Image 1: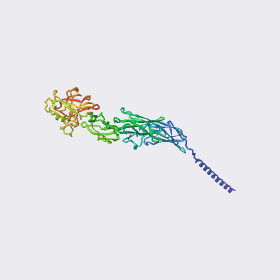
Image 2: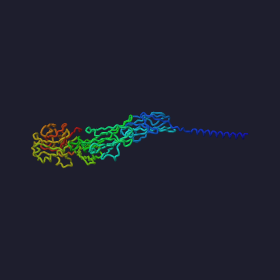
Image 3: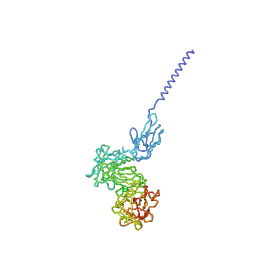
Image 4: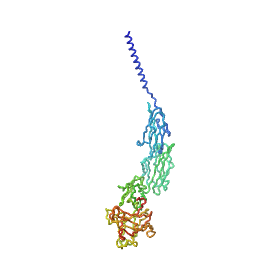
Length: 554
């Protein structure tokens, strides 16, 4: 009996274990059941949402938009945010307020200022984190000219002869017409195209008051290329005066609160012209800047020349040339020398036609300001104590040494540079009764000046003016006005002439004495010299200058 009971017990225990295992397996199987229902996710926006297909959305913003876009997120799951840039991966211009969250939330997207004004796109991807994640994409489009408005041209192979397009760095372009485009009269131009989801308003601006309404929109306005692209029909009026003309064709498309503007400049060449900047180009002879003119200086404006056809020459270690939209600029380093000017020959050429202009470019010495061009100078009158020393033929060769832009330094032959007056003059030749007198003719159409400078004989400075008088006039024979009155020792000082060496000899560093005249534009300057530091008889000079020193800081 005991044996049978033991057998029954074992059987019951095994049965219990089997049932327990079956129950555990069922429980485990129940835990692995998956709910195949996708996560719930909806997105709303404070801006206008447009369908983008497959349940996704897009938001279109104007180029100048700066602010925030708010997305409303509704879900019962955790979620995350990711921004994918489509136009420029290097530029991160959307900043989400959070990188993720749980449940319903308001997500703010801060839009950075579009400083380049270029179109840009990015996708904001919101993804839930449940068993079956759901993804919503909101594409942010700023500018959207690709869809709202696109402006282009017909195929280049169909352009009229000599008409070409110039593309700019910002993606815009201009249309250039040759000067003979309207040689036979008014002419129709069907070259510009446009398309988009909104019909634009088209108008024309003319920046030059003297050339208005030389382009008109044709009555039929457009011709269809296909259902989306239209060709703008323009009437180009005859250029009867053969001048340079400009116009701006403006396209403005609006959809709701969004406005997109595109402009295309149209220019027509006239007679080629290189206009040198009159602020520095003196008497149509020489372009002169001051020693400290190390900023960007407008040198020339090219009219009726395609900027792409402009070639420049004359650069060196202190002079750099550049060109922007037909304007030629120079950048120069500061000239710190007190005895050496800098010179260059600048050329501007139209490589397409071969037309070229060249000028002499000069940068003055430190402290000299903007000196006047001396290529037209002469000395039409002088005192008899000068004429008695030299014949008229000799003086024509001798006088130009005073304004030939050459003076002594250690590398030059000294005798061919300076002028000296002393022959045949009595010992009182420089006394009040017989001063040395020189009249300088500065030529016509000269620029304003306010200073007169004298450079002594730099190899031996002693015979330099000690007492002077200066007068100015617009007439050689009358109307003289005294601007520097004769006063004893109002010229050079001994300290100026000896400099740091304490000697009158060999001043290659340069010496000049400036006389302030007040603002003037008189053609003639009469210099009267009464005595020098050597004696009242001998006078020696290397060079003279007339200058505008208004901006010189001593």
